[in-house]
Image (cartoon, rainbow, N blue to C red; front, side, top):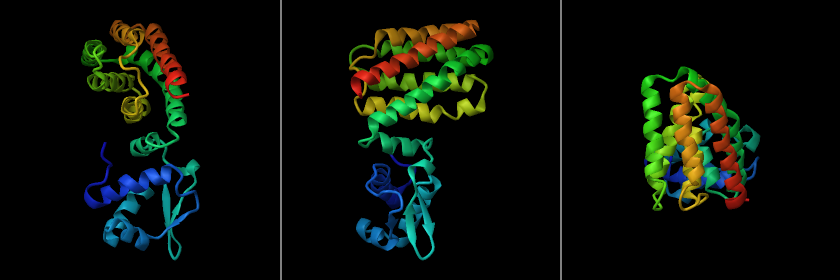
Amino acid sequence: MSTPGRGLHGHVLDTLGPEITAGEYPPGSVLRTDELAQRFDVSRSVMREAVRVLESMYLVESRRRVGVTVRPKSEWNVYDPQVIRWRLAGADRPRQLRSLTVLRSAIEPVAAGLAARHATSEQCAELTECALGMVAHSRGHKLEGYLLHDVAFHRVILAASGNEMFARLGDVVAEVLTGRTEHDVMFEDPDPAAVTLHVQVAEAVREGDATRAEELTREITVGALQELDILAP
């Protein structure tokens, strides 16, 4: 998946971002833009643009007469989809997946309960369509198609909650689900029980049953954590 950058500075980010998030440059490391420009064979202006993107993610900070300094991990914008993507591509993947899945388990059940109270008829129809799409792609090693419907399903749940803070986590959840698939932290075919749970969540939301929607979604997130115990211990 491409970085938020375009062209040459995007190429720099594709390499430098993963290196920083993987710890190849420990916190406090000083990166010289002149040296980096030479390494990547780009102009200083291109390098400065790449650094600006990294600064926006709080991965680095620029200091006059010092250079570009790598910030402590505690200061990174860990909710930035690109930062998530880079971290999932590195050796820290199991811990990152677990951290993000625990976040999902705390947020999504509550969001589903709220969705049962606030979802529009259009959102209910979209949830049902997504769930049925998941069913249709749950056999025959069709994980790419399954992922598209799975991501859309969870985006709708978060948006239909009516809580703008939950809705903004749609990109985070999308990166978690995409990362599991792209890095083979999924079974060749999704767990049939999990697929059925998504259909039941769509039904509960459509029927306005907040308690059931929340309980079923909690089962989905618990199942996702149990899969990690097997596939990414």
